[in-house]
Length: 319
Image (cartoon, rainbow, N blue to C red):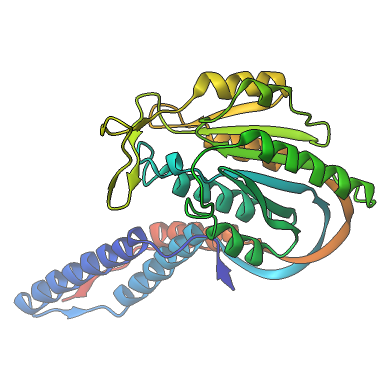
């Protein structure tokens, strides 16, 4: 038997309060019996046992006990999810906590955990673009590769979004020609810097579904660089801002869905829901054994004992 809910402070507190009340009750009854030279009736212990079992059953019911196994059929669906991750220096900006890049890593990690049957790949880009991890079902390997995608990946500064999108489209086109017919969902995570007019003309016909995630704020933030902050030619701090207009324009030209992740607007839940709801290719039916929540057994017993406790009246002491 296992429980659907963890044993929380509420369970411990409820059990403790019940025991404390009964200890005080027995202490008072015992003191009254001594003063009146009466004897405690044994039936009082029966009432205590009934109440103890009832409260125990109620608490167990709250935990959601599961036992007994039954077979259930589930349809396994799978899709390809290719991430395009901006690792330019501006992604180290901290206007989104802990940083734009770390936030992007968190989003990737959450999507993988929520869709374990899907296949994942990663293209990282800054001044250039590289396939950080080809499409794979090995989620642990994918996550390990994704963590190596940092702003130090490329030797030169700059952001070449065009190369990244072209590489993604070419990669998925080749992948489909090899007989892989599963839908390919593409998720680009970027602050939008470096998006030029030519990017909006890029072909994305190999993308079954395109999602753009803008990370940052329009107020912007300084960029950590060599234990200080990145400076411009005049020696002033460079302020990096979310290029919302550029990202929106790209989403319109490529028929993508735009999601913003900032301190004022957080579309993460909507992104997660959209990815979960996107139907993949049917990979077959699998039979699994599941344990049902049998909380009602304990609830019925608790209710019956409470009713019995109300109906049974006993003398606490005998003079």
